[in-house]
Amino acid sequence: MVLDDQGMKIFALNLCLDFTVSEPGTPPPDTLHPAKSWRQWLAGGHFTPGQTVQVAGVADKKFCKELFEFQADDIWRSRDLVIQVVFATEADRDYVTSKFTDKCKEVTAAGGVVINEKGEFLFILHRGVWTLPKGLVQRNEPLTEGALREVGEETGLVRHQLERFAGITRHTHLRKGKWSLKTTYWFEMSASSAEAIRPQLDEDITQVAWITPARWQEMAPTSYPLTRQLMEHVFLMNILQRDVPGTF
Image (tube, rainbow, N blue to C red; front, side, top):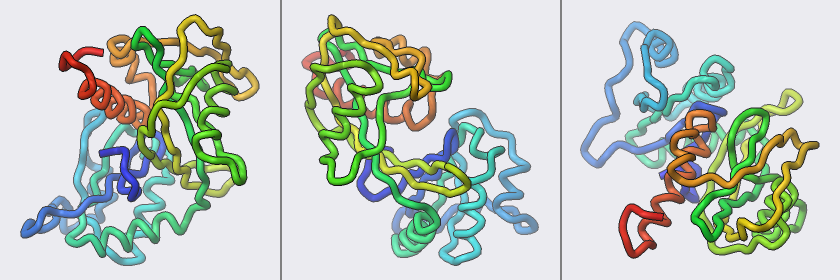
């Protein structure tokens, strides 16, 4: 599940690192060629977009360093893949995730999944990619207030209302030569389709649009995997709350 409170999925642009633990009594996957490193093994593979590939996780400093360097590589960050790093124990997984996050400055953001009375969702076109409005939370600002403020600034909405917490995502980001791990807290919000919307041009947002779930699923390849997985989660949450399964 992408939306957790333990940071077991970390996105690196299009790449996703999924830190998991093997089922009790099941050893980690034997996916590594004995003569190659795990990274060399991956480099020789042929993968389809969105594919999940398993790698056996090792709780040592060398593996932690290699994993961080792997996610920092632009070639791999551009690949739409899920690298599922499988550990034998929770302690091993927690050791690696802690060492991984120690290499980043941790920052906090908040954003909104905005739904109107027609069941449409509000998206922004940021630097040519469709995504959701979000931004950094200011010092001492409550997460809910930060989410409402950022959505208003990026979309022009002024009467949007908070409905419920939607979950957490995490992704790495390189800025001025330094890595950050951005934790974003998402909230579902409601707004009227009659309200004026406008893009925040000085933040490189060129379009704001209400989009139906069906249309979004057609457009999803032009978005980030993080946004796609978040929306799949939100769609499911909304479906489960409807009287008629499978409708919005």
